[in-house]
Image (cartoon, rainbow, N blue to C red; front, side):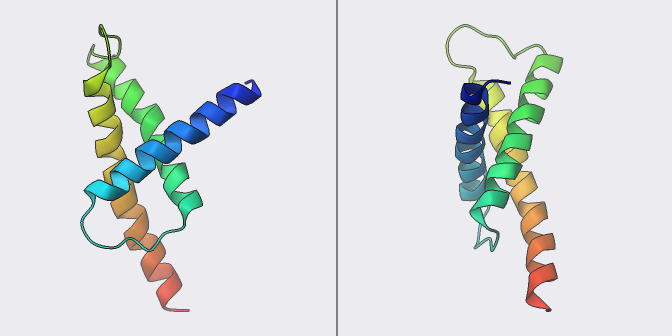
Amino acid sequence: MAISGILTALIIGLIIGALGRLVVPGRQSIPIWLTIAVGIVAAFLGTALANAVGVGNTAGVDWIEIVFQVALAAIGVSLVSGYYGRRHVHR
């Protein structure tokens, strides 16, 4: 993977993770690197899900794919926030 591919994955992960974090109500006490990681995973899984249901490549902007990615990021942020928050509060 070229450096441009890595940078693109980080930027997309940041955007998808931030959008997922905005969708989740309340405050999430997770660091930005974890938000980016969740966003990257959600972006890959959302793309795979969109391709699996046949909406991965549409004319124009792939809005359904983006919705899948953001929804998965929101779920991921919720899960990670709950686990990370409990793990670091009780130390």
